[in-house]
Image 1 (cartoon, one colour):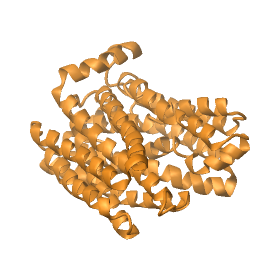
Image 2 (spheres, helix red, strand yellow):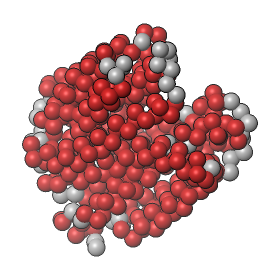
Image 3 (cartoon, helix red, strand yellow):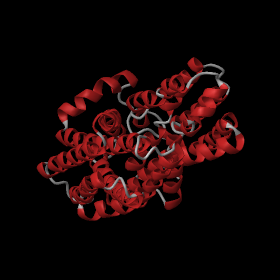
Image 4 (cartoon, one colour):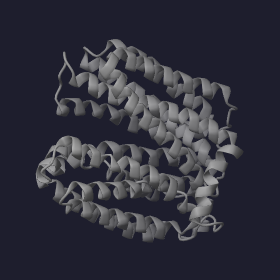
Amino acid sequence: MTTETLDEAGPNGGLVAFLALAAALGTSTTYLLQPAVADVAEALRTDLGTIGLAFAGGPVGYLVGLVVLVPLVDRHPPSRLLAAAFAALAGTLLLTAVAGDVLLLGVALCVTGAFSAVGAGLSSLAGRMAPVRRRATVLGTVTAGIAGGILAGRIVGGWLSEQLGWRMMLGLVALTCVLVAVCCLRLLPTRPATTEGGLLAGLRALPGLFVRYGELRVASGRGALWFFAFCALWAGLAVALSAPPYSYSAERIGLYALAGLSGLAATRLAGVWTDRVGPRRVILLGLAPAGLAAAASAVALDSPLLVIACLATVDVGLFAAQVANQSTVLAIDPGAPARFNSAYMAVYFVGGSLGTACGALVAEWYGWPPVAALVTAAIGLAAVLSLAGRPVPAGV
């Protein structure tokens, strides 16, 4: 199938499913080792704090990948570029698996994080390949894959580490990345969207996009606010539940993450409705219940079921808003959307990083209710930005 045919008809269901699964695999690689942190520390004969610093290399690398790797999807043949990214992921996972000291582990995790941004590259490609009338629907499916990778990376990584050991687990995932790399060569478009400029030109152009495009500034601002809220909620919850009077174990706290499954179901539905009614309505319909649930969570901590209900509602609302919001970013230049997606995701990720830090600190210093108030305020401010912005018609 030629690139021209794909541009006219859009990707079929099988190809969209592959994009979603590949995005899930690529994104998951940053989170695979998190449940096995104690086993890794024991194997490398060091303490948990030192391993935690090494693990911080993953998010740092991911931010670099967003800025460097994702824009290249427009400038090079996607089939070869994304296949190379998955092959590189396989190599870095194997390097992590044989790491004998913390320094090598940290470097390997940083490089793995950079190439795990391949998921964002696949979502950019999906936005380019999909016809206007189906863009948000296709994007919603691939976004579900990315979100699923974040969740499954921890769950599957922990289970496989328990069954096979963390080194063998990484080797198995590396083999899967090689298989996906081969599939990328066979299934993805072979022509770039543009041949203008190189890597340095693309990097220099990113700040200028925010100056030139008001819709990118608004979308990035509100996206960063709700990702700040999302990360603050989960980081603050972990701190609050691990402290007295709850003193939950890490395993029990981790089970709360299953509430995130509800958000996966919301992404595709949000994409369908974005194509029908436009992104602004879907964003506001997502933020409203998310804000109410965040506020209600302030008094829900004594009831696990109520906490899970609040978390699920927040996740559904924010995932829906993210799909609709990202569709506006990819629509700025449908023929070459990767540079806009790269700029957006970089700001989005910075918001999440700040949210993680603030949520944990506020919970430790002041307790859980102020965290809930902070999350509610961030979601409310994102809604204000959405109301103030110019509506984008459906199918654009």
